[in-house]
Amino acid sequence: MGLLIYAGFFYADLRRTSSTLEPQERRPSYPTQAKAEQEAERWIEEGGTFTVKTTKRVRRTIPLTRQERRKLELLADEKRRALIEADYEACLNQAATDLAKELCSFQQLPPNDNSTASGVGDSSGLPSTKVVEDVRVQTSQRPRRTCTPVSSYRRLNCIEFDVDRNEEVSREQQNSLEIRGYRQFRY
Image (cartoon, rainbow, N blue to C red; front, top):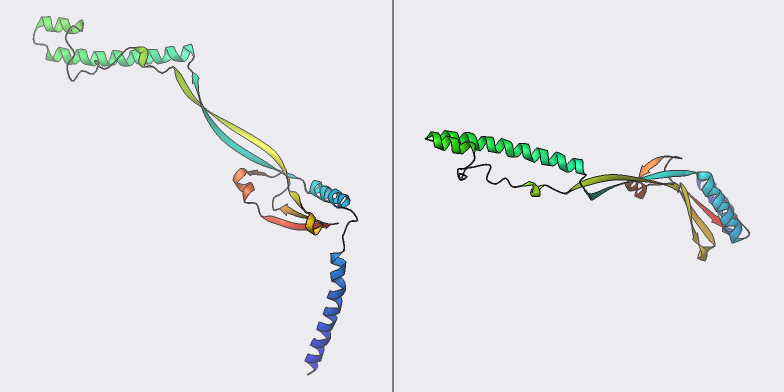
């Protein structure tokens, strides 16, 4: 029975204190909207910033320099020479007479079906451009705290992201930041 009486006094006291606090919470904290915005801006500046790092890969085609072109031509010539030597050796193995062997040295025999040098053309098959991939890194400073005005309720709703000052995050991490704190500036 004593416990019920104690509970009754407790809830009566709670109702009395909570009813007096509600009007205080509904009163504007700042006399004007400009003053509330000024305080919100100060709060945002005190929060500091974090860095968002965006990495972007860009592929582009550029013409070959004269030196690069010459290097490709030399490599193609070496490949052609190796193929001709392989064909010469195959021709000598197939030649039955001395005349046929002599003609192999002048490449006068028609190319065989299994000839490897027959498909090698001139240097027109060499590329004239090359693909270069650039990595572009962009960084931007973002405030750790931000506010959104809600004029119908005469307040600014502000949040603080769960990120340390001057911390570096990626674009993907920025999109999934959690909220550390919430604050309202009423006017």
